[in-house]
Image (cartoon, rainbow, N blue to C red; front, side, top):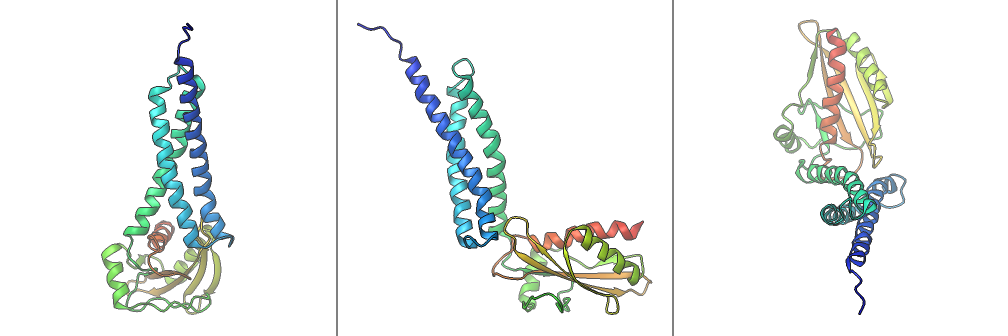
Length: 251
């Protein structure tokens, strides 16, 4: 009667499971990367991209569990390759899952608006940008004030001409497409394409003089297409722009 130990067979089977988990992790990460890029180049629409991202999240979670179990079962003394793959798989998938969770949370919890402005009573208008969105009035303003109370006009201690120059400088610094720079009306328009999906978002900026000799900067950022929420993108854009602009005027 043969006295062969079953341990090598068990180890081999476990290695196969770990390798399968690692391959699924790689596929999940690749899917998470190509989903928005495919939408950006027009290969599929936004809805399909979201479905692919959800598949990547579910598959990635299952794969992470496989690798997590693998770290306890396939130890270095049993299989160095299997143990290495489990650690590498976890190192790859955990940041991806955290990003997908952040994106999903932003999509679900952001208010259902895509038009953010520092002046809800008289928002900057679009003259040059091909944006036909009409500001939604009190309903949009209420959503904005509840979700983004920090979106307020920026007051600068420099005259409008200087504030205008600084604003143009920031637009170029951020790599936006400058559409209009009307010094006479102190009006600026620009467009930014979002990194992953390539959505075109338009920005309008008005600069007015204050009684103290300084400037008030009002800004509007809105998605050119789509409906519902924007995941907080437009509010973050205004906040980031002001955070870059203010130090230039405070020098």
